[in-house]
Length: 159
Image (cartoon, rainbow, N blue to C red; front, side, top):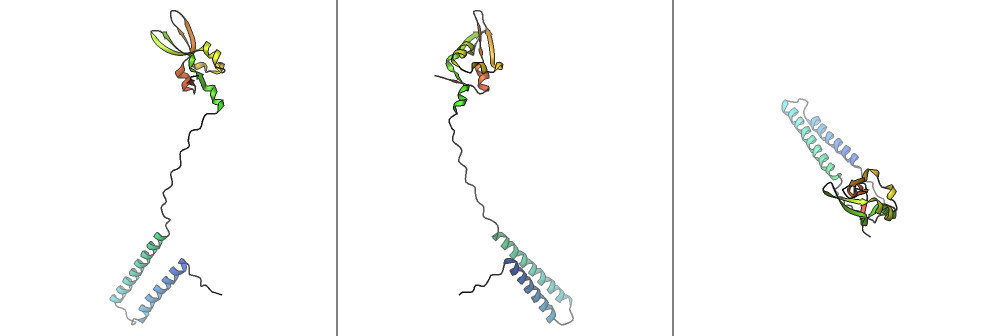
């Protein structure tokens, strides 16, 4: 049967080093003659300062050991586009209803209201804000502004 000895923790090592440094400093003071001149006091202060610097250097060295390594995160893959569900098809307007009408000296694109009623099941649900009525000399055209509908999520589909 093998017997393992437990290694002292980091705290215990620091405590032992402090006790050892203190005992060395005290032993040096007690071995000196009873009289102390200014040179002896200066040496003691210098020795304590050196011990403090050594302790600070050891502490800084050990602090760097416990710092976790820098890990660069892996880039996350971007999700690929998925096809639209069938419920979104209600926003697909038939392109065959798109007409160009000359009104007020300009050519204007309009989705004809009558064509939409015959070819698009959800024509009654189109937004009223996009409804337009164009008058020219020969006829009156009612329909929907395609730009307005596109801003609200509708799109023209061929077929």
